[in-house]
Image (cartoon, rainbow, N blue to C red):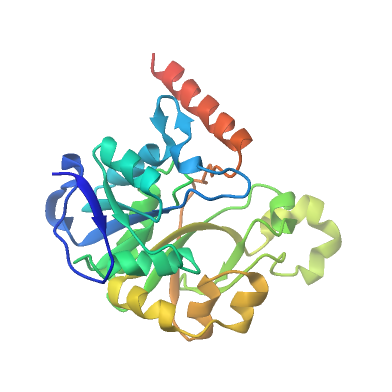
Length: 281
């Protein structure tokens, strides 16, 4: 069975969706939720943008579904057009309120109606999401029930990324837990600041990948936490968790992401997919 659900009030609902999502012992233990909004300043309607014959949101759903740890995939949206498109390709869409201030609030609304231990927040504008990245983020929380939240990091590929405020940097402790996330170039290399062109690879930092895993109870409590000064100054919601004393485990991945923010980004991803098809011929 596939279909559309509306969450007017929190409630539990049985799994419905693409048949190929049922996977082994992890069924219902881990749910991937993909928030998808139609409104976008730079690219209105991008979840429905055609990408080699399929709407972009379908590529994201199928990528998440290929992760062996995911029991179900749900698209969370406040737009009937997106919900209809998801239902048309056999996916599961949940209609949420339109007044959520953040994507995490939308995620929590869906989580309230899902009977899963872990909720994975997969970005709806990453059609090339690799299932191995989801697995890397999920495994630490499956192994350690004391971890409330997890995410990913990947190596910086250039000095320009280190300096770019649109590239979020993360620094971690020796156990892999986040110390801080920042748009600023952290840490400051005091002893070789004037040699960064040659020595930037020595920086004890990494690029944050915006894929999150939450323990369900923590996710339901998160929107009730008071927004924090660092969160608001950096405009990074994950800092709210750190400022309230919650730990975030940051797993490593060698893979980056190919997000789509503009029509030009979509064309770039389209070419990548075409090259992959040619390589398989």
